[in-house]
Amino acid sequence: MTGSEHPAPAPRSEHPAPRFGTLTVPKASDVLAAEVRERILSGELGEGTALPPERQLVEQTGLSRATVREALRILEVEGLVDIRPGRGGGAFVHRPGRESLASTVQLVIRGQRIRLAALHETREAVEPTCAALAAQRRTDEDLAELDAANAELIEAGDDIQRFLRANVRWHNAVARASGNELLIGFLSALSQAIHAATDLEQFMDAGIREVTARAHTRITEAVRAGDSAAAMRRMSRHVCGFARAAAEVDGRERVELTKPES
Image (cartoon, rainbow, N blue to C red; front, side):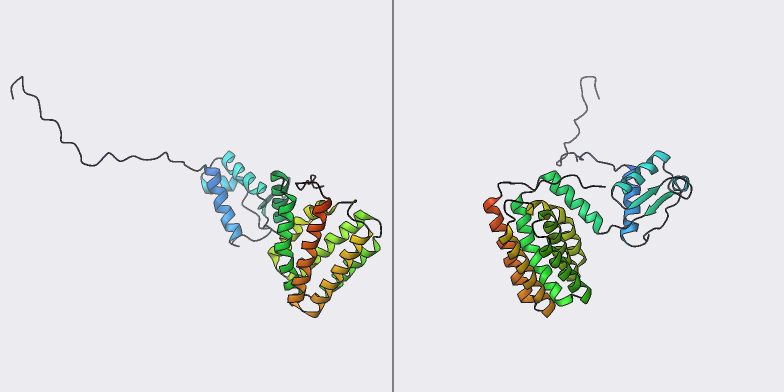
């Protein structure tokens, strides 16, 4: 090769150089929390099981104490562990129950400022099914609770707040009689919203209260008779009729919930 000669350029590849997107590596605390969460939800760790002490978790996982503490805080916020201080304390498994669902639904209602129309639509979709299932599965105790709740509603007289509490009690009793854990939890979660949506003193006159008590009685009769079709039909007529009538006098657009009392 002479001084004036240059090496031939390398041939170009027919394919472009590969590119990779930015990778997101999960935090170690999230990974540990995910493992413990899965073991709780799968049933491997039962209710009340004590997790290893913090020092042992550090040794077993090879993670720092700060990372282990952060993972436990994540699980505590999710309601999957209870952190108890002092001697005999530590982290204990808490499997999610209806109260977890209620808390989450109420946070969504408050945070999203759910429309009243959406609440009424949800009740119209869910409560007739609760009534139909209740007719199939109700027990003597369920029937006694339905009768007691409706009796309290009638006895409330002009005490609107007592009437509203008894009304919610009756609707929750129908859900419990359905025997469906998700429906029971969901209706329980909606209780505060239902109370807020029905808290209309200018609407809850004697006539409306009488119609409500009569509807409850007829639905209870269908549940007692084991007539699912009638129970569903009567509950649908009840909640749909109430929604339409309330809309005529209720100028609110959103469900306004106050912070639940601790």
